[in-house]
Every structure is written in structure tokens, then in C-alpha cells.
Length: 163
Image (cartoon, rainbow, N blue to C red; front, top):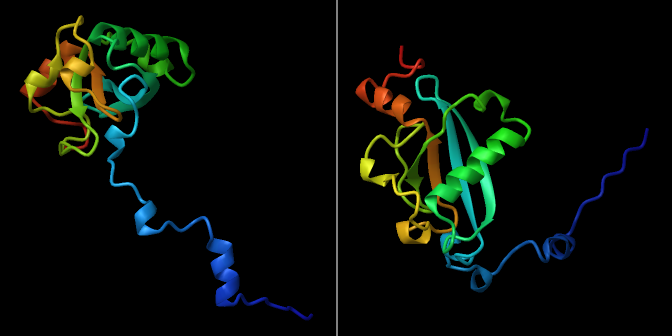
């Protein structure tokens, strides 16, 4: 059997990679939280079923208008998605009632994998406040959970993985 192999010259490789390699002057220094308008943001809502077992699934919402969407409306959007979209059946029996800021794009993240236990002031208690008033930007992440289960978990933040 005669196996022939083709070798590429530097010229061939350069022509193959044209369009895939960006020059430093073409790379934007704008962070992703500022690349989209506040009227068309992408948010991640971490739907938490169990703190103890770290059961969480991320719901990515596109084209959210941060200037007009309120905390209450965001809760309703997330609840509606959980109730109607495929893949959410295990989460449909959780009474989701509380949103808490998890992180903003390019911000520091917590070491706790399920929720940020610090900063209870990041709990979004006022359903009438708009997201932009609360500092939301493109790629902000929030946690959506049952407040009673959260308070119990804070008293003894052990997960089944720690035992």
C-alpha cells in the first residue's frame, strides 16, 4: 500500500488560518458585560432545588430589558420557563420565591459552588425594582431558590459531599 502524506508549507498554513487569527488591534478591550445594550442583556438564573445536595441547573435568558424588567417579572419569567420548558421536570415541585445576586460578569465568585452565602444584602426583596436599578448588567448571574430552605442551609451549610 502506498500512503502519501501531504505536507503544508508555511504559505499554505498562513492562507488556511487567514480570518481565524486576530491582530492585537482587532481585539476589543470592552468587557462582555458592556458589549450588549441594557435593553438586550443575557442573564443566567441558577435554579436551586437543593442546597444540601448541590442540585442546581442554569437557565440562560436572552434579550432581557434590564431597564424595564422588574425583580418580580424576572421571577415570573424563570418560573414560567421551569414549568413549561423540557428538562425542568425535577424542579417543578420547588417553591421558588427568592432571587439573590450570585455574581456580575468579570466579578469575583464565591467559593461555595451552590450559592453565595455572604452578602444577604444581595437578596432581591423588592419585586418592583428594575434590574438596572439593582446594578444588573449583561451576563449577571442570580440564584433563584426557596427562602426557607436557604435559611436552614445557612444555619448548617453542610452538603452531602462534605459528609
